[in-house]
Amino acid sequence: ALAQCYYAKKEGYKRVTTETGAGQWGTALAYGAALLGLKCTIYWVRAVYKWKKERRSLMQLLGAEVYASPSPKTDVGKKLYKKNPNHPGSLAIAISEGIEDALKNEDTIYCLGSVLNHVLLHQTIIGLETKRQLEKIGVEPDIMAACLGGGSNFGGFTLPFIGEVLKYKKKIRFVACQSEVAPNLSKGKYEYDFADYGEFTPLLKMYTLGHKIKMKPIKADGLRYHAAAPIISLLRHHNLIETVTYPSDERYVFERAKMFIECEGFLPAPESSYAIAFAIDEALKAKEEGVKKVIVINISGHGFLDLAGYREVLKLK
Image (cartoon, rainbow, N blue to C red; front, side, top):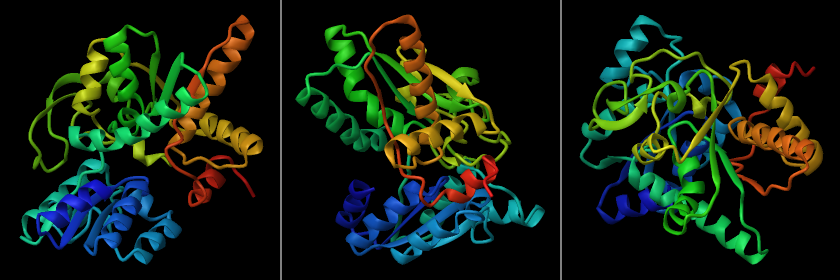
């Protein structure tokens, strides 16, 4: 987010637009825009906008305008909104709204939160820092896992290590943790598709479920996206990435998140709980087999603004 806001400022833009699903990326861009004196408009998937009021307030505290998507503000959003004012929305629709807004205003540029190569490149700071931390303690990973929607989190975390595997023939398993609602890497077709509902983006070769597919809303809405980034899709196509999917009711992964906070005192974002579930299961499997494995996962964000989601799924009183 900081990198995109920096280049937007450098190129003379006054405002940035974006989409957000879980709200993490929207918050990040709002912060980047505030630091660099830019206005910020965020189109937030309506299903999540409704229940994450605290995160919405956080974005607004950072100076951002936040709209539920689909919204009446854009042509793409207006058509869907008129048909159904309670349309749950999707990342693909929110992306279209952000792009359309930017196209209609010369002082504005759109900043995508995932999928495109430059976004994954910026996020590799995560993997580079992880690599340095592991080097300092003399540890090499056997397995690396992270949640995956469009691919920025997973790619940012794993790409520096995948480069090492390709160059030096190291053996590391890379596992993308997904929801069965959007299993783009395991059930998608490897073909050219749009990254957005309104077909503003270039065609990208990706594993895709189709840019107009209807997907049931989940609490980990950052994972509810129809396609995986071209770089990630190519690596999957060459069998360098594995996938695991979890049930759409999310109880299984949220129970693992509950175990995590009980042990670590930190509540992960709903999306991160997918990677945690995989790590716990894999660690227990290794224990049963009597083998030692170094399992490294990425916690993509905190869940302290997601308590309503945890409360609903786990039926907390």
